[in-house]
Length: 228
Image 1 (cartoon, one colour):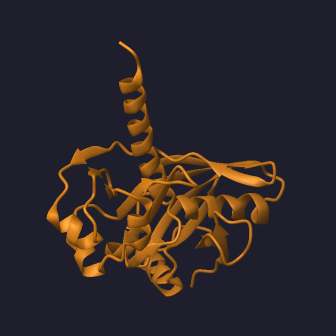
Image 2 (cartoon, helix red, strand yellow):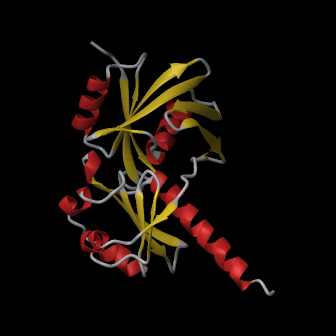
């Protein structure tokens, strides 16, 4: 029998029942993959994180209801909160050893911040299958771990209602749809039926991926606007 403490944390929010919920399991040593998967499936959150103390820092793994994943932003932030606020109060920084390398969470002015690795995006052709699944034709499409589709307007992002079966036929682990916003720089939604999660409320790795696109996009246009 494995005994551990489990916490439910609402990440990317300043109050409960908002943001994106993650379960964080503080375990003395790694359980079997099968047991961690069963716990994640029973929790039925988009992510269940498992943390194991490793010297001054911690090992961290993430499981969705459909399998283990190599990077998750909100469950990393939630895990940092658990360590810095609940398990070792007063500590200011923790570094997690993960499948995506070391990830640090830092307590700063009553908040928690972290850095995420940047995916290298490669542009891929927009297909009819993407259009059929999303309900509007993307302007551009990019592939890293996930498929990123840039839609014409933020309204296209808001009203999209893709069928899970159609998403299963697209390349990439998750689908992120994004567009430039009015009130915000960009709006993004993330879908992961391949991992047993139809839509993730707030996806940290999706934000990092979409940000990389808009960073490239803005740099390109600044270069185009420079006088000869």
